[in-house]
Every structure is written in structure tokens, then in C-alpha cells.
Image (tube, rainbow over all chains, first blue to last red; front, side, top):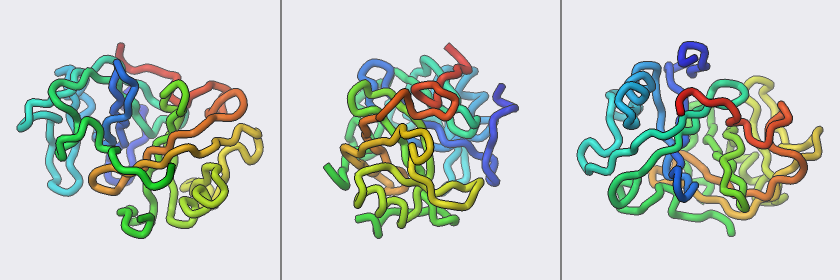
Length: 106
Length: 106
């Protein structure tokens, strides 16, 4: 299946990370085929950093790893939704539980 | 704020659409500055179709529009999370409630 997915012109697919318990959307990051394989093999989320052009595992420095519970793909096969158990204080490098802590419109 | 957001090289920003009541992630689609403005002005989600190279309002043909409740942006200002009330049977053109109806790993 991971071969059938539609990666963009940079070989990437966006992955929405959702808390499996609270259903809160925690973050969005990008995977390539290799980081998705690593995610499946290890059970921890791995991404491709576009700015640093390297692989990273969520929590590799903070310890706030994400334990993968379920991986969904969408109707047009170009987006992933990954339900995780978030270890530690949260997903965001700012210290917030979610990266989506600011609002445009209420 | 919508000027400060980081759009990609195609002028687009991904928008995660989440059901405000069930917290289910319904879909991901792309907005440019104009479609985000339309979304805020009308209170209904508007996107930019990369395949058709045109604006589209969710539900314009099906009637399954999305009423915008809250718009969040993430820590690095390159992703939107929009909480909506989903009108009708669902968000997916396949008839499913969510576009993420298929699973890779449980």
C-alpha cells in the first residue's frame, strides 16, 4: 500500500497526527516512503524535515515520542492520518500540547 | 494574520478539516490566500483545486457544505486546522463521512 500512495513532486506526503485518546489534532508533518516505513517498523513517528533536509523521529531530543496506533489514508491517497499515543507533555516544540494553539477566527 | 501565514511555492497552505462535534478528521485540502479570505467572509470552506486549477467550495455540487466554527494555525504558521459543522451525509465524495476511511496499520 505504501507504494501506491501519491507522494508530491518532492517525494513527500503530509501526515496529520491525532491524539488517539482525546482526538485532538496535534501536528502536521511530512513523510517520504522511507520515513513511513520506519514509522511502521518502529511504531514511532518518523518524518522528513524539509528545512533541514534530514530524517527526524518525533521526540528524539525531547523524549516526547509518538506511539503509533492506527494509520489511515484518504480517498485520493495523498494524505495520511496517524492516530498516536503522545508521550510526555505534548507534540509542540513550544511546550504546548498541540501545534495548533493559536486561533484566527472564533 | 492571513498575510503572515507561510504559503508553499505554489501559494498554497494545507487545511485540515475537523468535525467540531465528533472531533473526527474529515479531510485535508489546500487553500491559497483568496480561498482563505472567501472561507472567512462566507463562513463556508473554500479551497484551491490543484488538479483542476480552480477555486471550489466544499458542497457546491453535493450540498454537503462545511460551516466554519474556528480556524487555528500551527507553530510554524504553514498549516491550518479548521473546525467545522459538516452539513449532510459527510465530507467525502465517495459517500463516506470522512475521507480517511481506509487503514494501513492497526
